[in-house]
Amino acid sequence: MIALLEQGREVDLASARQELPKCPGIAVLRDAGEIVAMCALKRVRSSYVASISKKSGYALTDAPEVGYVVTDCRWQGRGCGRTVCTAMLQQAEGPLFATVREGNEGMIRILQANGFHQKGRCWPSDLRLGMSIGLWIR
Ligand SMILES: CC(C)(COP(=O)(O)OP(=O)(O)OC[C@H]1O[C@@H](n2cnc3c(N)ncnc32)[C@H](O)[C@@H]1OP(=O)(O)O)[C@@H](O)C(=O)NCCC(=O)NCCS
Image (cartoon, rainbow, N blue to C red; front, side, top):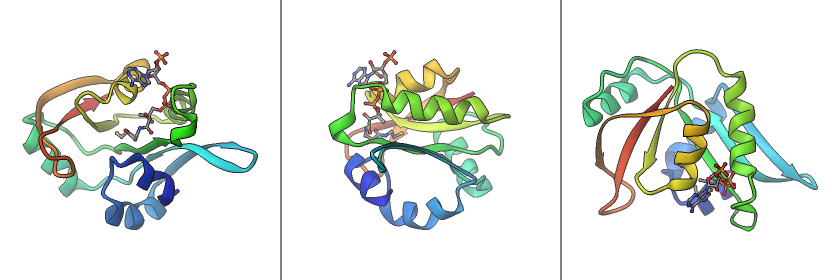
């Protein structure tokens, strides 16, 4: 899963190595045993939620974050991301949030299809110079 996230180039890998085993939910889509797409519900971290609240200017309350979403590049554009996220999100109850790079249209479409709306203002990405991150909630 870490190799897949590394390929996606949208997450801090050091943090993902620590956080992935602690996630309360992980969904994967496999082809012949190999993981081709994944997504996760991260554990609630109040200090992280507070930092996103501050950056976005939106009063976010404690909730799990949807993250670690990636589709193997050989499988992208074939519905895998939507399938794996929708399967997980259909089972998730209560408020959720996600942070997404502006212009990441595939991820934004997946969130919109699952009832998420953008809130607050965008803030500069720590990972990608010159890019912005937006807050999405459901
Ligand atoms: C975002 C990502 C997971 C999407 O996975 P995918 O398997 O290619 O997505 P799907 O094929 O299920 O497409 C989902 C929707 O986005 C649309 N879409 C996909 N790529 C798109 C693009 N580049 N531009 C516009 N729309 C796009 C699809 O048409 C589809 O819309 P629909 O369901 O309304 O038909 C994949 O691009 C990826 O791994 N990106 C790198 C990691 C990443 O950005 N993760 C998200 C971090 S928050």
